[in-house]
Length: 555
Ligand SMILES: [Zn+2]
Ligand SMILES: [Zn+2]
Image (cartoon, rainbow, N blue to C red):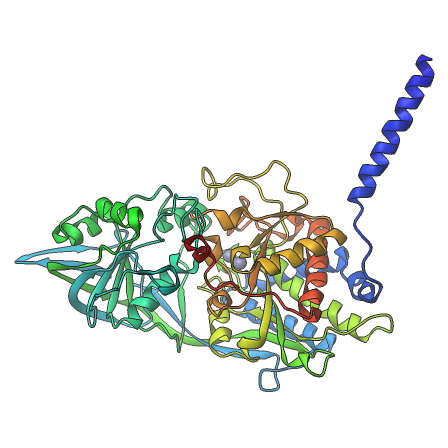
C-alpha cells in the first residue's frame, strides 16, 4: 500500500512535471520561417562578438580606427547577406561630426542683478557647445519647459521668450503620481532635456539653463551619471561630439540647485513652491525674473571635424505594394574607446546589438531565399548607428536624413545591450528593483507609445519563452526611455522599442567583455526579434503609434 501509494504519487508527480515542462515548451516556429530562424546560432554570436569586443578594436571610439574596423566589418557582412547598399550606392551613410572638448576651467554661467555679479563654474555648471558661446540676456522662468497641446499643458502660454535665456526644471510635472497624465511614474517624450531645448528654440529663446527639479525624489542626471563610475579612471575625459548640421542651434547649460536658487530669487516664490504649484494643478508658473540677467560663456580646448558612418543595408520586401514600407532593425557600433592602456571593450554595449543586427540580416535574407521560406512583405532596413555613446548622433542623423520615408516606417527594433543578465550596480541601487533571476529576462522599453507593438512581441514570445519585463516604462529616475537610438524615432512618431537586457556592474567599464555574455539568452532574444520582425513586415495592419498616451487619463 505504502509502496503503491508512493509509486502512484511519483507517477502523478512525473506527469505533472511533464505537463509543466510541456507548457513551457515553446510553440513550434512556423515552417516558412524555420530556415532563417535556424541560422541564429550561439557559436556565431560568440565568434562575432569576441571579434568586435577584442583588444584589436580598441573600444570602438567614434571617429577612431577601432570603430572604423567595426564599420567595415558590418558593411562586409551586409554585403555577404546580399543586402542592398541604399546610401547612394553604399553601405555607409556619412555622418559629419564635430568633436569638441569643453574647457571646464573657462566655462561659466553668470548672474547679474543690480550691481552684483555671481559666477559659477564646473561642477556647478555642466555642458558645452560645439562652438564658442558668449551669450548675455534677461532670464525668464519657463516651468518645466514643456509644450504639450494634446495634454492641455503649456509652460510657454502667454510668455514671450524671444532673445531671452529661459530657466527650466528638468523632467516633468507630477512624476511621483501614478495617475499623472505624463505617463504616471514613467517618462514621456517631454521629460528629456533635448526636447526642452528644442522647444525653447522653437519659441525663440537664445539659450537655456536647466536645473534638476527641486522636489525630485531621485538623483539628478549628473548624480546618476557620476554613479556609473567607469570613466573615473580616464586620464583625459571623453570628448563631446555633435552633428555638424544639428537642428539644435542654441546653447544649454545645466546649473546646480544653488545657482538656480539665486536666479529664482526674484520669482516671488521658492523653487520648491513653484514646482509644488505646477504639480498640484498643472497650471503654468512661468514668469519673467525681474532684474535677472544671465551670461553663458563656453570655450573649448579643441574643436575638430570628422565623419563617422551609419552602416545601412536594405532587404527589399517581397510584396509589390508593401515593399515601399519599412521596418527598421538597429543597434550602434561605437563605444567608449581607450584611455592609456585601458580598453572599454563594450561587448554587451553594444557589440551584442551590432552582432544582433548582422545576424538578423543574414537570417532574414537567408529565409527570403530559401525554398521553404518566405520573403518579408515590407522592406527591412538594417542599420548599425554611429556615435550613440556621444549622444545618439547617428540615429538623430538618420531621423533627420532618412534613407526611407519615415511616414511609412512601421516599426523599429533597436538592440542596445542584449547579452547580459541584469544584476545590481551602483547606478541602479535604490532606484530600481532587479528580480532575483534574470537569466531568461528581457526588458522592452517604449510600450506606452505602441501597445500594438508590445502585443505582437508578447504573442511571438510563445515560440521563444523569454520572460518579458516592462519595469523601465514605469520609472523616471534612470531616464532609460531617452538613452538609446530608438528615441529619435519615437520623436518622429514611429513605434520603436529598445530591447535591453539591463544594467550590470560592468556597464561602461573596461570589464564589459565577451566572455561574460549569456549567449543562450542572446540567441533567444534574436529569435524573438526575428519572429516579431516578420510580423511587423507581414501583418495587414502594422502597429499603431500612440501620440499622447497620457491623454487617455484626460477623458
Ligand atoms: Zn549602448
Ligand atoms: Zn553605452
